[in-house]
Image 1: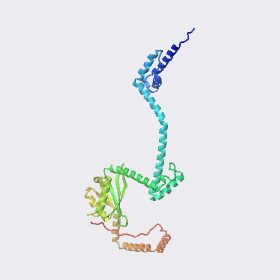
Image 2: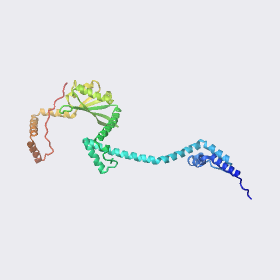
Image 3: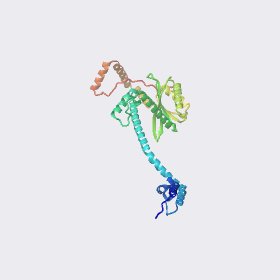
Image 4: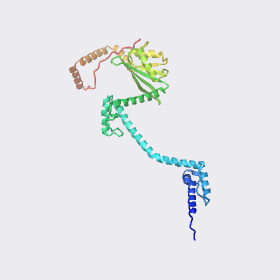
Amino acid sequence: MDRPESSAAASRRVERSRLRRRRTGPSLARAPRVCSEHAGDNGKCGRKGKGATDVQSQAFKRHAATNKHKLAMQRQNNLLQAATRQPHIDHHHAAVDVEKERAMALLDALLFNCQSNEPMEAWVRLVKYLAKRGVHGFPKKAYGSYYSAYGFGEFTQATTTWLGTTQMDHIRARPYLGLSCDESTDRCRGKHLIVYATFVKNGVVVTEFLTLLTVDRADAASLLALLLSYLGAIGIDLNRITGINTDGAAVITGVRNGLVARLRTRIRHLVSCHCIAHREALAAKDAADSLPQFGMVDAFTRWLAEFLGRSGPWHQCFLDLQETFCQTSLELQGIFNVRRLSRD
């Protein structure tokens, strides 16, 4: 007959069970499974045989102190953290994709508005139309910053700044480049100097617009100072400029005091090229001077253009005459004299 267990014996049995659980611990208890899954050839540290509890506990502790067990536990924790972060990462990627689609839709609309040379007010109508059509990724919130002409101005300025910075980085990285300049000071009220850059990019010759400078004085010295100031501001080394293309204005192509002549004093290796269209005009003028018949045609065309330009009814008669002879694609324009280059 079994003797009943005393309360003291029962207490000692519960205490021994508690101590065994405390010795192994949660990390040691799961060590065999972790090492088996992630440690590869590290081996398993399971219970083998019927060794004493203390011996097994010491084996667990020795294994937990090894680098193999620590590496396996680190891999296990990395997998748990990755599984926890994955939903957040997917949500973040989806949000980024939506913002990219919205940015591309806005850039397409901005490019269309700029290429069409439309005013800022046309941007508001364009945005409302695209939103009404349900363009994918386009902002649908009415009366937002995207639906404002001022917002369009800020958006355009930010895009211009980014494009200008990227363009300047490409140009400054080129070992050599050429310039193309043209001034509008002869037949218009506004005085400007337009500048292009020609360089080799990825084996292809590329010509890109740089700037449109406002001209205060249209003499050669002022134009040169304005051009040098701009090139210095964007960080272009003058020694890397190999050539310049210009029009036939005397202030640009003057042999002694023109813009090109003054610039060549600073860039000794500079090669200049005069506009081919002006060269053809000069050749045509020389050919016309050698044949009297061209002079008669020139005088009659000038008189006809001036006469029709002063009278609306006569101009309509000329259009009717064009339709009769099926020449509606023609347009009567005045002819301007072309002179030789200035020697100054």
